[in-house]
Image (cartoon, rainbow, N blue to C red):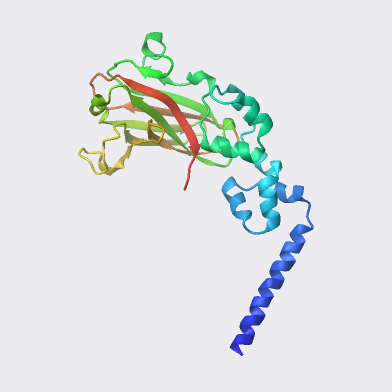
Length: 265
């Protein structure tokens, strides 16, 4: 009796699954794509595993991925100085373009969007990279509008940097205040340490509350500034890193930029 009930239950599931998939297969791909486009990239990838129809739509429909891209993505790509514009905009599908932008950084406006202490004086910058001349106070600021990012997505911002003289890392072994603020009034503040040699639980009153920097596989060092969430409406997001304790002169810091990328849960 128990065996017959199990067989009937399994058959029932197969019947329900068949009916659902048949109904979906009768819908136009454009309709399915439009519905999926109101989710998120992560959700879309999960949905793609549910049926062959979903997989084909998510994998091939520009309707889905066009909504996941920033509204003015073409303008953003054209402002980048480190990519092949024609290849990205005219060759790749919307899905491939999204994946490329998620995995690669765009250098916007020739990398001239950051501000540093006394940064209005040309003598305090060196090209081809942003190189901070010795100063007593450490402060870096930057910003972006969320219309340049994908909507309804959690992002994290990172300072990407290095030093020209690795023997002086110890002068950056002090806590700095990191802040992310949106024009909508949200403010997230924390502490970070630039020295990649610092380990969690190190000495000092800051303890484990300090965000630690880490070496990247490309040779640069990064430290997280904080997180923010993009919505449908456009907002201005500003980032700042500011020294609050140490008064020693600092220099030899090479800043690649502030990198903003989707937060991986």
